[in-house]
Structures are given as C-alpha cells and as structure tokens.
Length: 297
Image: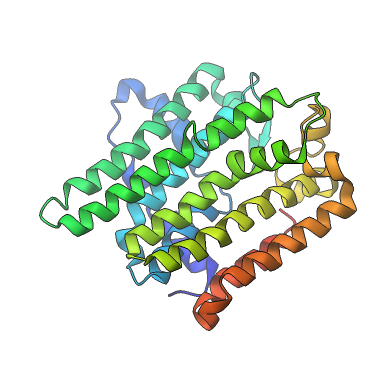
C-alpha cells in the first residue's frame, strides 16, 4: 500500500479525463464545461480514499480506478450544482470562477447532469469486462451500488435537502450531524466502502474502516465550518463567510468555535482508535485524518 497521498493523487490526475465518452462536436460546450470543473484542482480526497482502501484490503489500486474517477465525477457534479444561484450562489471555487459564472446556469446544470450520468456509465462499462468472473463482478456491483446509494436520496442528496430546509432555523445537534454525515460524509464513507469491496475486505475490516470513515467525514465538515469563519480566501480558493451570510446551520454557528475545535479533535482521535488494531498498515489513514484536522484549505 502506498503511504504518499500525492502518489495517489497523481494517479487520479493522470487518468481523470480518460473516462469521458466521446461527445458530439455539436455539444462541445458540454465537454468544455464538464472538463472545466473536473480539472479545476481540489484535494481529490474521495477517489484517493477509494484507491487506498482497495489497496489496504489487498487489492490493486488500478482495478479500482474507474470507480475512483466515477466518484470524483459525482463529487464535481455536486459542487457545480451547489454553486448555482438556486443553491449556495457562489461565484468562486478552487480559486476560479464557478461553472455557471463562466458557462451560464443552464450549461452548468447540464454539465453536472453529464458528470453524474457519465459516472454510472464508467462503472457499468467496467462491469461488462468481468462477466466471466462472478466474484470480481460481485465486488464491482457492490461498489457501484454503495456509490449510487451514498450519492442519492439516502445520502448526499438527503443531506443537501436537510441543509436547505435548516436555513434560518434553530435546529438540534441531531439534525446538524445528520446534515454533515450525509451532505459531506456520505461520499467519504462510500469512498472507503467501495474501495474495500473492490479489494475484497472481510466483515471486520469493513466495520472498523466504516467507523473510521464516519468520524473522518464529520470531522472534515466541521473543519470546513471552521475554515469558513477563519480561513483565507487566497488559500481556500473560495469566498469565506458564506455560511453566515446564508444563515446555514453549521457546527460553529450551533456550538461556537471552541467547542467545534474540541469536537474536531475528538473525532480525529476516535477515527484513529477505530483503526488501531491494524498498527503500521493503517499509517496512511492515521496520517490523513490528523492532516485534515489541521488543514488550512
């Protein structure tokens, strides 16, 4: 298993555009719009988690590559739609104008739709190659199903709806964590889950690693909430103060900065505890959650 985050990231960057199907020249704006957001940079956290989880379970990162790239397509679609005027109405993403600012609301919406549908095309295309190997096909079906569920009405979309409806409202901590675990955490959880399926993980590893992923996902969003208050626009590549401006339900708004930092550290420690039994084999995941706790972007 690789120990270097940047090595995994390089694999993703090198192959991210490989899976876009041929688009008719008459629809070339669609391709350009999809590519614009897909290649705008970012942490590539979710596909990296998928590749590393696959290797952690004993698989080959390259067999998981179609699913990792599909997941990044889904994540990118969600960002395009989040930035639209009807949603968060953001004009800056990763240091660049958001998709709808460049291409207009209609093309941006369709570019998101295109990325979402292409993600499933990628995964189905890979399944077609394994009809003669029932076990390999079963692993891929499980991975694709986990990704579909995490991105859909039982995961990310559900969290987005709850987030919209919670604006301007006093809400419980239970609802706050529901939003974070679904809107942000769901794709982080399924990144690990899908990678473990593709690597052939046993039930015990699946339980421990999914507990780790849940802590990581919630911690990641709390860190985002903190950065929206204290972060630098130049470093983040997006505008800060947006949550307060839109009266978003965030951990900082509900609990204050000190408690948010305490909860972030608590979740980081819990994530490490869930993988403690794997000793040095889990060093990548330990280092990752600690790094994300202290991130500035």
